Length: 475
Image (tube, rainbow, N blue to C red; front, side, top):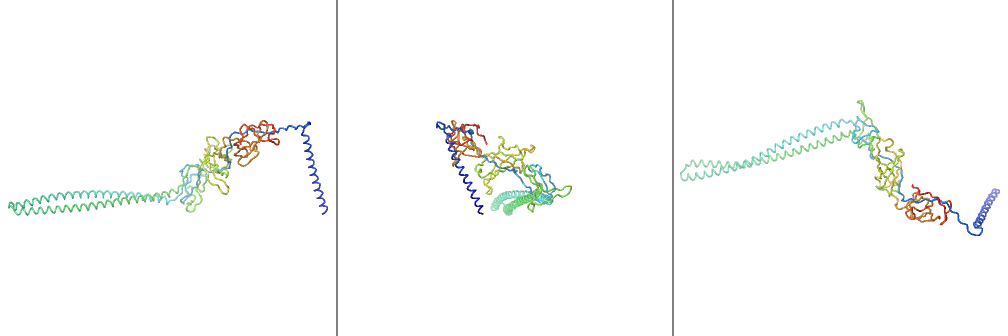
């Protein structure tokens, strides 16, 4: 144990001695170098120029872009469920079939629905016949009403006639009375004239009573017209009820027909129709527990490319943001790259997912003609989406990020430039640094020579030898 401790002590002592010797050698060597730095006559030696690489700033600011993965989804898609239970008797499409909006894709046999439609159609015809019957009754009642009103007018005329005749008989009676009083006529003639007068008087009263009776008949005829009109209204209402029942039956029958909701392609088929008189698969209606769709149709003339934009880029998303979509399965194809085919951000969620701190945006991309090989978008494809969020500052310049030698708060920094063969540290104001280029908004001009690399340390005003790399490369 003691020998081991002694061994450790000796090793430590040797290491310490080596360190001390190295320090002495470094100090002695530096003094020697300082002595050699003077000329023979004591004058200081001129500093050796440092070789530097320079670039000229590129005019224009940095465009803010967001490059994220994107997934292709159909613009519209629907699972088609049955709303009526029955056997699948017809299915004219399969997966991959291209369909147009309104095309019949499948039919389900429900005989009771067909019979219900026939019954309700017959009921509608019956109700329409009753309407015609009631309308005929109404016309008859209206005719009776007009006849009753004419009878009232005739009775009134007869009253006038009877009244005039009564006045005539009354005058005759008075004349005969005068003649009898003068013994110019016999009393028998007076009796006759009194009878004529009484008859005329009663005839007038009868005519007046006939007017009253005619008016009552006219009122009765009017009541019949009102009743007939009500009967017509009731019959027409019955027609409406019957037509509503027929419409409902037709809707139920229409549930047995599955149609394409829009132009697209069939992407799912879960059942098979019968053949040769054999019933097909039994389909259960969705409201009766059917959870499997018959078919699925997706619209393919227009697709959505879904991108999740990170939190730092969310404030810059707008309707003017353009996009270029590249799909991994379609190498060399860029959607939205040509000026005539520019793509823009179509919509965004205006809310971030708390779990990922990203916001969903969608870009509508017209799907090329499926006849063009290797140039069609399919649901589920993925790739890279480059979204141009904001343009760069028009009066700014761009230099490589390696040229920025110091950063401070508020976008302040410094770069080294070569002027008159010497290096100078220039303060600049920058806006964006994407790791490749820096957008400088103040402190530089496109004519400056900006140092990007040096073969040695650079002091302020140090002489340099320039290797020009031209204009700063773009990103």
